[in-house]
Image 1 (spheres, each protein chain N blue to C red):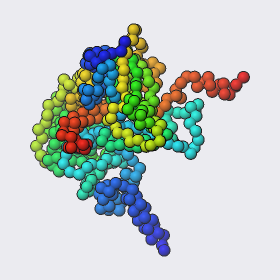
Image 2 (cartoon, chains in turn cyan, brown; image 1 turned 90 degrees about the vertical axis):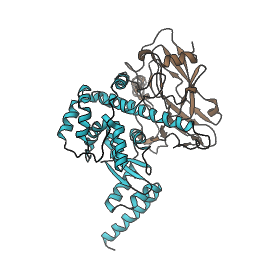
Image 3 (cartoon, rainbow over the protein chains, first blue to last red; image 1 turned 120 degrees about the vertical axis):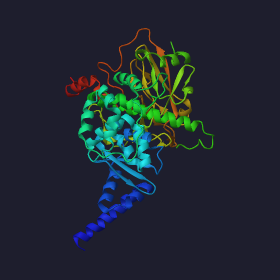
Image 4 (cartoon, rainbow over the protein chains, first blue to last red; image 1 turned 120 degrees about the horizontal axis):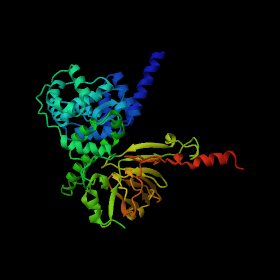
Amino acid sequence: MTSEGTGGLAWARWETEQLARLPDPVAEAVSGLAAESRRRWILRFRLGRPSPAAEVVRDWLLSEVAGPPRWVVPAMAWDHVVGPRAVLLSYPEAVGQDPLALAYLGWLGAGSGDQRQAVVERLGPLWGLCLYAAERGGGVEATGLESWLSAYRGALWEAGLGAVVRWAEMRAGRAFDFAVRWPEVPTAEAAALRRQLTFGIVPHRPGGEAAPDPVAVLWAWAGLPEAEQAQTAALCTKALEGWHLIGVWRRVAEMPAEEGSEWS
Amino acid sequence: MVLGEAELRARLAAPLEERLVVTPILDPDQIRGGSLDVRLGTEFIVLKRSPRGPIDPLQMGVDAPDSQERLRVAVGERMILHPNQLVLGAILEFIRVPDDLMAYVIGRSSWGRLGLIVATATMVSPGFRGSLTLELANLGDTPVFLYPGTRVAQLVFHTLHQPAPAYGQGEAKYSSPTGPEFSKLAFDRDWAVIRRLRRDPG
């Protein structure tokens, strides 16, 4: 047998063994890819586990978006694959603790226009900040920056985010193929939450309730100096996790017993 | 003096500097009588048998990657704790104890009767901020499933006669962790003395 033939057999055997170790929906999505892409995704799932922040952000942005479950894995780049029973999403491992950059998973995982519109409207003032943070990982599809800037330019300057305004003005990008109803900036809420972050605690409401809105938490966090952002990223992620858990917990707890027996 | 239910609720809503922070509270029923129930969090450090040798506190760094593996188990999923296995977990809640309070952690006897011991450091200092690390050990003969989100321990808060210097300032070792942390025994200043004694026993 030639060395090329031996190599081909070795690759095939390796792939078969690795695919058998992956969850069925993931293996199914990976199997249909071209060889190079298939091997890349196998390695990603073999070697990496998503950061808690990546899972929390995915749950926040994509748990109510229609379609198959989204599987997230660290890699060297943003990437996605749509399979029959799974959507596979990868993010640059270096941004695994940055909830704003990770919000780009919402855009990648949403798929169609309607779903992407919902994700963009949910992010609102965070949309351009998310692209700005995510672009450090390369390969970001910068979309809708002009529309976003026209809605939030003043608020961005007021929040000390002039660097992002200048970046967005320079960054050419195509327009959305849908109309966006940009929500208001949660300025007052964010001010109180930013004070909690600088106090070194998880943003919350008095009484132990979770912060009212992840957008307010992330807007508060985005307004901190970069060094403080690094120190408080975990507090921010914990606030998002709390917000998501309280919503799901109470929804399931209020279901009739037979429906409430399963977590969704 | 132990804080009762009404005082606990009042301190949870106090102005920020005096506030007792416990978040998220998934169910208001977590505060009852003189205690506050805390839940099992979603992040774990699984301690494994290492082929490379024992843990030597004298040589230990902040992490011991050879003998530990980080794991996340979402609420709604579960993990197995085998007999004689030790796993580090954390409470789901982030807490901040004001300078005039301290707390004791008490494992729930319902879990203890299944063999699960929540052998955490039982005192929470004034000024502590973070999610408490729990040392979960199965002392029974049967594997036990751990379900993140379940109530695993209680906090009982006490007032101090004089507010203490805040934990998290100066020489404090643990600063706002939001998940379990491996032992930081290596930071103890006594090791410098122990090292010298080992080199020069006389």
